[in-house]
Image (cartoon, rainbow, N blue to C red; front, side, top):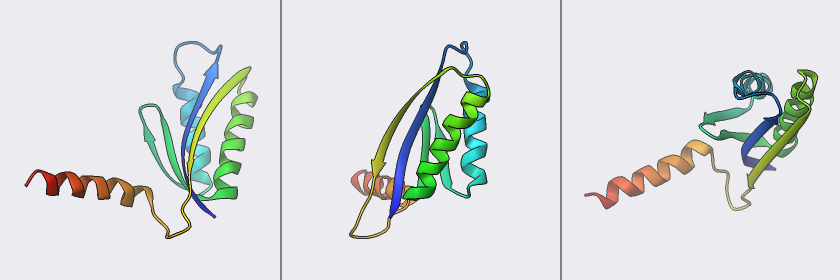
Length: 103
């Protein structure tokens, strides 16, 4: 099953900068060949359910290996059965709508 996930992982008790941990997760997701888009408060990921969930599991494992004692993760998960839809298509659909409304 295809899935689009909004993934936000927050390392706790590691100081103010989370950049090294977020960067590590970006590498894990990319290495798994998943389409993804980093944004200000998380990462959108699309792919097959099992692979996306495995990438999230690997992020948890790797950040714990890096010394993070606690992690808090938020997920929003979207699936469709009527057709496949990519992250890009979802965004473009709204942009097109906005353009048509402003004419």
